[in-house]
Amino acid sequence: MTTLILLPCHSVFTAAESANASENKLGPRDAGPGFNQSDWILAPFQYEANDHLSFVEHIHKAFELLDANPDARLVISGGFTKKGVSISESNSYLQVARLRGLITKQNEDRIYLDEYARDSYENLLLAIALFRKRTGTFPQRTKIVGFEFKRYRFLELHAKVLRLKHVDYYGIGPSYPDAATFEIPEHEWETKRKRYFDDLHFSEKKFATDLFEQDWFGCIGSKLYDKKVSRDPLKRGLGKEFYSQEPEPVLNAFLGFDQLTFPEAKAAYDDLGAFPW
Image (cartoon, rainbow, N blue to C red; front, side):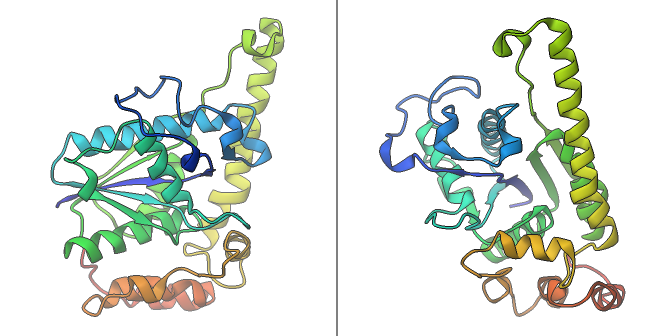
């Protein structure tokens, strides 16, 4: 129980109840459950590059890593973020894996669901907390599967704030459709593709990395905190009561940082001493 595999979620798959599990294991690019765009609750920016297909690839990669290492545990992380939807992001991803034949007797007991996380920082923090809660130990190595454009956010911001060692990031997608898909000339496609990725990286910087560089924990009173609240229609919060663990004062301190202002949280962080992981 030495390796944490983190699969952060980006949406909710809604078609699980109307489908049956595949009798055969599908490949990441085999059409099937998860490939229908209308089966996902997508934000406007997630349509153009068919982000849902990247979600499927993320799921397959996470299970590939899990099956390759019997000491690994997979945490699928994503809370109840959609109003009026009764399934969490993480549980919906688990259903995609089930429908695509990825869950087996050999791996089913090594899959954990974090159903509280509301942003990428919480994805990583709560995955560590859940790993500790379920195994009694902290991971010695962390493997994260997600979008390539989020590599900097996870490795240079969240992982460093948490002082994690031995972190690997597997960046997949988004994969922009080709010119034939849009039925436009190649030169128009190149302009369209460039604009898409320019906008993507601009948004990642403005609405994520710039904000996390100013406020590492998404503290109360910040834009990051307001964004988390908007993604929490059930008002469940961070899940501190669920994740707090008696012998782990450092972990418990992290679980309370978002209820402080950032200067208060930073001062408490500086006084934490050695981390147990």
